[in-house]
Length: 193
Image (tube, rainbow, N blue to C red; front, side, top):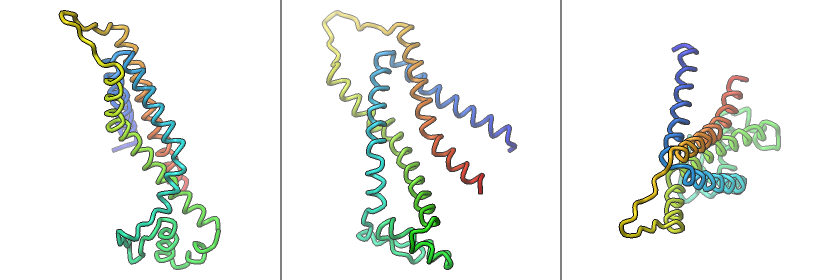
C-alpha cells in the first residue's frame, strides 16, 4: 500500500464519519440537532474542566488491592510504577528517574499525553452512547409528546432537515477534530524521532 492509497482511505473514512453525523442530523431535524449539539457542548466543556482532576487522580490511584505487576515491578500507583519500570528496563536510567530531571519530566509528560488521549476517546464514546441516553430521557421529560385524539403529528420540513444535516456535519467534524488533534501530536513525536 503506497502513501496515495493510504491518504485516499483516510479521506474516505473522514467523509463517512462526517456523513454519518450529517445523516443523523438530517433525520433529527434542526431543533433536535441543536438540542443534541448543546448537550454535547456541555458534556465536553465539563469534561475539559475536570480533565486535570481526573488525570491527577489516575496517576495517584492506589492499585495495590489489585496485586498487579508488570515485568516484576509491582504497580502501586502510576506515579510510582513509571520510574520503577523504566529503571528496571533501562539500568542506566535509574539515576535519571530518581531525581527531578528533564528525562523524568519528559516521561511523565508523554504518559500524561497518553492518558489525555485515552480520556478524550472515552468521553467521545460516552457522549455517543451513555450521555445520549441521558439527553434522550431529559428531552422526553421536558418535551413529552402530547397527542390529542385525531390530531396528526407535525412533520419536519425539508429545510428543517437540511438545517439538522448541517448541524450534524458540524458535530461530526468536531468529534473528528477532537480525536485527530492528540493523534497528530503523537504522530509528530514519532516522525520527529
